[in-house]
Length: 258
Image (cartoon, helix red, strand yellow):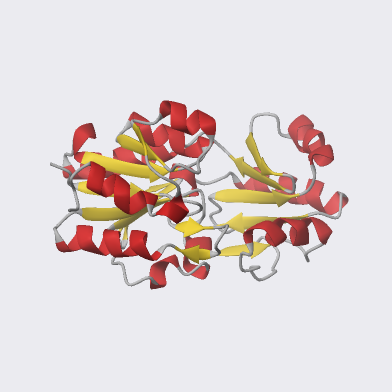
């Protein structure tokens, strides 16, 4: 019996080709909740981006959130995990970025801010994701859980030479996620599963990209038909594309919905 389901956002709940949340998917998640199945977000986005993107305004009462690719995990108002980056490391990142006239997005548990005014690199990034541009203010010692650096690949080596022990994940021509230690979506799912005592075959997870593969370490992983080929290879099941009501059809496949 399925007791819970975790959902990625981009190209899983939100169709970037059609620029909308797919109605059949949102309706299906609401049906799950009415049946007593708990539903969670599981995304690379930080909480501030989740909120600004409107995911919390869909009429779904999410039971919890795995954000920052597992760096932040919460059940309601209770935080189960919050990984932070050392103060001195953040100061060093800020110094390198300022020297190169770059801006970064610093992410806290519930907020985010830019460390400097935007530039063409930031514009190019937001031209892809159409995200809300956060406010600008200098770093003041906040507990930062993640950093998003806006720059092309030519700047990567400067940061890696000075701070080689950080984890750098370039997911966009002008976007690099930076973390103090490795964290995965699957780890975040496992933390919540442990709280409830769920087993792998009692939990479904839905995603489409490389970062979503680790969902399958903890749960039954469904890859969207529009997903990355490698994610499809690792998935327990590949459903139709997001625009073809793939999420709803996958829930029917697992007999969670009629």
